[in-house]
Length: 177
Image (cartoon, rainbow, N blue to C red; front, side, top):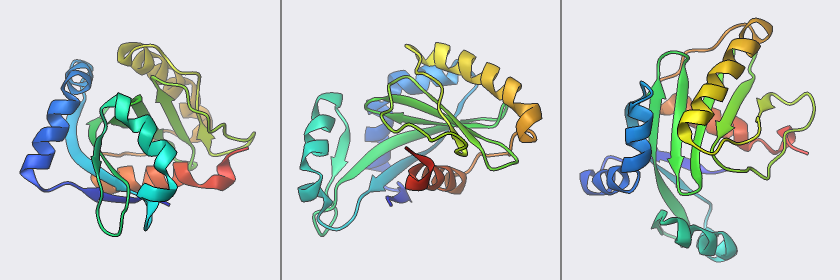
């Protein structure tokens, strides 16, 4: 499971904001606000055992760091929206939108194809990807409305720790086929 750390270094934070400035601006136009910069790091020596993943990140202009001992770490931007309660993750592949529900379900919409397919009955719902952030948000809102009555309404989110909890739930391998 990945480790998530809120970036406090102002130079690295500025670099993240600059890298994702287009995505941040698009999300701000949709009523999102900047939440934090996030450093997602993998386990010890992951820069070696995840070398193919490392190669895939290069064309996406990901911000990579290599904390000891040879960990692969990627810096991303987090945004949040109050209505519906949603956290957006800006990453090299695109944007993911996370809205949790009272029953533990998480709706995760995105602007890119995910290869992790939730199994039937999973607490993760991933609709097909959208081409743009605006389309993903419109589709996400429609899905939130349709799921709200069935799933007990949305849970409030808006902190870095909320994002960490959602990411750990998404990473739970038992959710996928």
